[in-house]
Length: 138
Image (cartoon, rainbow, N blue to C red):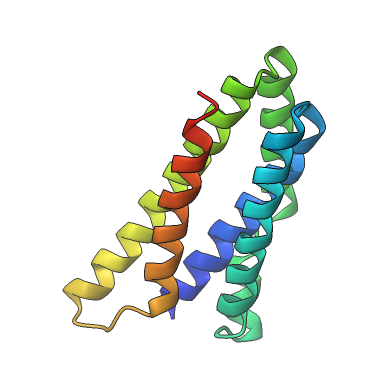
């Protein structure tokens, strides 16, 4: 199902983004927050992954070129400004991109009359909660 591919893609990219940002985080409190967010993201990844066949999973995972581009983008962006405000803003931007892509998929399913898996709804709530937690660093 397309929604599970989208969840796998989003959570894998989110976890990788956190891994890329971590070397620039100097505040232990922020580091612990984003590490806990990463754990939750990885849990969503595992649950969605179980719903996909091997071919669907291959289609959903981030390709090496995309991972390299993401890492370079974070390195350039965080390298110039590694303040808590900037790093939190970068993560919030990433969560917002995830919300947009998952919501588009949810909307398509609803238009087609397909039941939305609870996992997708839970992920959207988690993204909102994670953004709210990061806002305190802005």
